[in-house]
Image 1 (tube, rainbow, N blue to C red):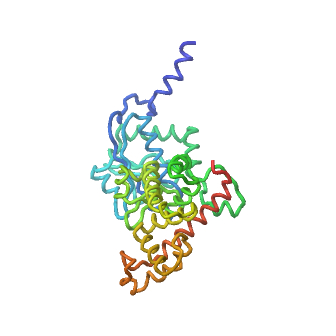
Image 2 (cartoon, rainbow, N blue to C red):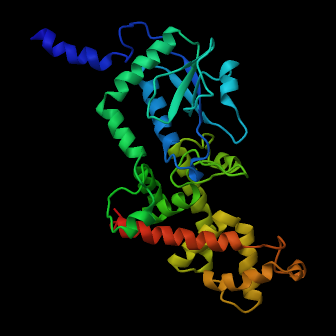
Image 3 (tube, helix red, strand yellow):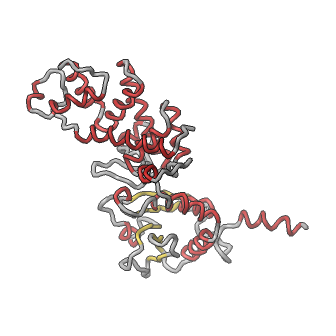
Length: 343
């Protein structure tokens, strides 16, 4: 009876490393790079999010720390792996990346991406391969794979009349931080879908990163330095929305208009939106309504705007911001259609 009772406890605490009892990673910090391209514009879905979660699961099971970074547009982390600047790289499964004296390509995780490790043929390689084998055979892997391989396009689901309680893999975080903002969490989900299509690895040419496309300097303003981390990114993005909303709340806007002006400032910057409001007032338009602001934005594109005293930042094309508001509202309507409850 004693043996029967103790065995599950021993199994629970065992590092998933096969027959090896020595943990080659215990107490270490691994630098891991995820180099899967900009998923926002690819067909690979949410693979960066899946691998981010798996790397953290590995660290927990094997009692080590990890620092996870996402590859930039011109980064080559396979070269960094060969040179010893990173320990592990998650990359696309291609014939051009093969094992060598310094690199091991580990067991395949999900068919289209692989983990590459420095220290070919070492105990570290065997330990990760064994862990991957155990993980792939577990219900936990099936759960994660299901979470990150779902179809999260709200418009496709709405067209098919699908209803669901899950909008994205990050609903729990969206609900948590929407409360501090005072918004329906589905509106925050619409912003995230517009910004990144729910991919933590999304990036822009201007340097914005992650789920809510936060600029690094904006993240630091709210104490966030890891924009790849889903919670930190959503915290920084919603904190910025909250600051912008507070700025515009003094103008007596309705709640719906306040959301639109806040979103416009999130996209274009508060200075541009203030310029547009000032010009609308000077031209006799109602500057408390976004649709009225849209009417004066064409004037912001003309050279004569440079002589307008009410405009401080000069010409503003505004096309992107107008489209941004329309897109976010369209996403929100689709999300409300497929997920009728705001709870």
